[in-house]
Structures are given as structure tokens and as C-alpha cells.
Length: 131
Image (cartoon, rainbow, N blue to C red; front, side):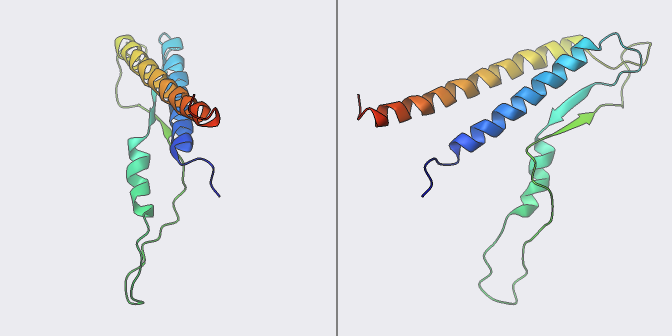
């Protein structure tokens, strides 16, 4: 018997993504004056598109083509942006962009925490018998 649905697992993975993104943005901000430092970003969409091939379809006839793939299942990846240079020293960290990304990620993280608290609140209500 499965006690919880996939919501808790999805929220956990989303919190891991937001934490990794926050760490990456913080590293970019910390290295704003480091010569030849290239900014990094945590990407989810590319992994999502790659994992779309992992969707399984039910084969109703032996001659149907199977939908299988051997790709690795990971929720996100960190990529380095080495295509631009904003500073004369080879550094490509844009401080305004990083600060905006940090604020956006903090709002996202807080919304995940609020949703998780709501789920736990619902469980407490059920355990207490509706009170």
C-alpha cells in the first residue's frame, strides 16, 4: 500500500532543483570579479525534453514498435555559459541578471515550501479526525 501520492516526491525534487539553482546563482555572484569565470545555470527543461522519450506505451500487438530508452533519470543539470563575455577580463557574469534570477528563485522556493506546509497541514487534519 502506498501511503503518499507522488506529490511529496515531486515537491522534494522541486526543492532540490531550487536549492541547486540558488547555489549556482550564489557562486556566479561570488565570482563576479574572477577573471575568465564563466557563469553557470541549472537547467530543467532540457532534461525534461530528453526524458520525454522514456514514456512507455502499451503494446497491444507483438508487431507494434516498443518505446524504450536507456537514458539516465535525473531531475536537472548544470550547464556553463561560455558563449558570451561581459567584462574585459573574460568574465561573463551579469550581476543584474543574477540578482533577478535569485529573487525569482527565492519566490519559487517559498511557494514550494508553502505548498509542502499545506500538504502536511492536510495530513494533520486527517490524523486529528477533521479538527
